[in-house]
Amino acid sequence: MKTALIAFALLAATSVATMAAEPAMMMDAKGGKALATEKGMMLYTFDKDANGKSMCNKACMKEWKPFHAEKGAKAEGKWSLVKAMDGKMMWAYDGKPLYTYADDKKAGDMMGDGYKGMWHIVK
Image 1: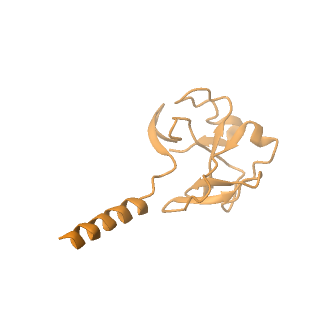
Image 2: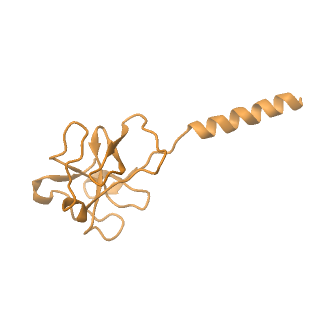
Image 3: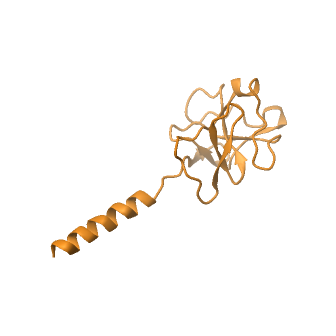
């Protein structure tokens, strides 16, 4: 019985450890659902990014903050990791690097959607 309990505990611990939480979530936004950080800040893609590579340079990153991944983060499903221009790893969704916008001040703000025709929230 003791061996069975230990085996069950190990199985449960392993199952929980392998279930990684997604780095962002879908939330209600104007016009439907959109991808946001756990704090509710909208995530954007940049039309100039190509082939899973961020093209947002140092000047760009003052307004458009890369959605950085924590050290040791693992890609899974539609989520991948790419290198931002600051050398840190950032999240990409469906191959597109993700950013937050500096002018979005509170959860649900979408000030950057459609900015210069090149920035879009992720739906």
